Amino acid sequence: MPNRPPDYCPRCGGRLEPVDPPSVQRCGECGNLEFFNPIPTARLAVLDADSVLLVKVDAPDRDLWGTPGGMVEAGEDPDVAGARELEEETTLTVDPDDLALFDARTFAKFGEVQKTCLCYAVDYADVSGTPAADDEVADARFWTPEELAAADDRLLTSWPDAYTDPEWWVEEGRAAVDRD
Ligand SMILES: [Zn+2]
Image 1: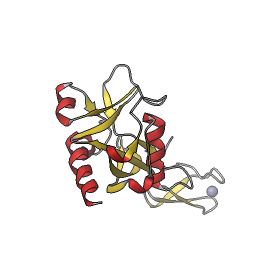
Image 2: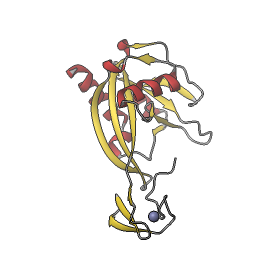
Image 3: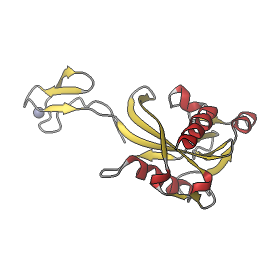
C-alpha cells in the first residue's frame, strides 16, 4: 500500500503545491486541499512469562521476526484490528477488551512510509488456542529475548529503535498487563 504525499491532484490531475508539507498540499489548478496522513496499525505483545509471541516474516533469505499485527481497516477500532491480525497470523483468538494499550507513536517506515502504531499487550492466559503460522507468516512461536539473540535472529529493522528490541516488548508489555 503506497503512502507517500501525492504529486498531483486526484480530482483534476493538476500539480500540487505545498501548504504545510508534507501534511497539506493544494492543487494549483482547482484549489483542492490534499491531506496526507499516516496509516494506523495495531501490534500485539502476547506474553508467556518472560517470552513474547513473534511471527516470522515470509522472506526465505532472512530470519526476521515481528510481533503480530497490521493495518487498521476502515470502520474498525484499533484493538479489534489487533485481535483480527493475531488470529489471521497465528490462529490465536483474544477478546479485544483484554488488550492493554501501552505504546502509540508515529514514525516513517523505511524513512518514508508514515505509520501510526498502537501497541497492545495481553497475557497468554487470556488468549485462546495454540500459536500456529497461518498463510500470512512463515512461523509463529514464543521467544525470550535471550533465545532470539542466541539464535542470531532479529526483529524487523524497519521499525523505530524501541520496537527492534525484544526486551522492550516483554518489559513494557508486562508492565501494561500488570497495570490492567
Ligand atoms: Zn485539482
